Image: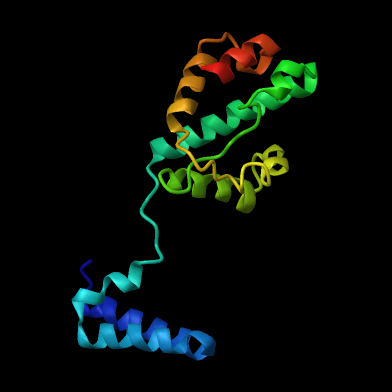
Length: 168
């Protein structure tokens, strides 16, 4: 990361303010101030270590499509009460793998917990370990989306349609 002297001055002032407002973290902010004052570029990464990389728009759209598909499946489950569908292993959203699909899992949490979207998924947070599937899921969800997109209207799925999607 490259930081100009002007950026360093602004950050130093910000960290001084934070150190005075948050006494419990003052030592941490003082360390960051020293790094910036002395230009220790090798430690600049500490300034940004808590900032995640950007989530590409394509990945965000994918997560939204998966959650939207599960919303449609929830509608079918509610409408049909089909026992085969209700008992299916993938009948509820499993989340994403916390180790290998962290950005997807984090984005899901943001959508559900911070933005209040897809609230029908909140009932499963204990079953899916707060959206952590503990196994890679993106390939499975991509197959499900392909199958769902082959339907004339995913919002008018039958129980059999939903089962085909879940089995994809």
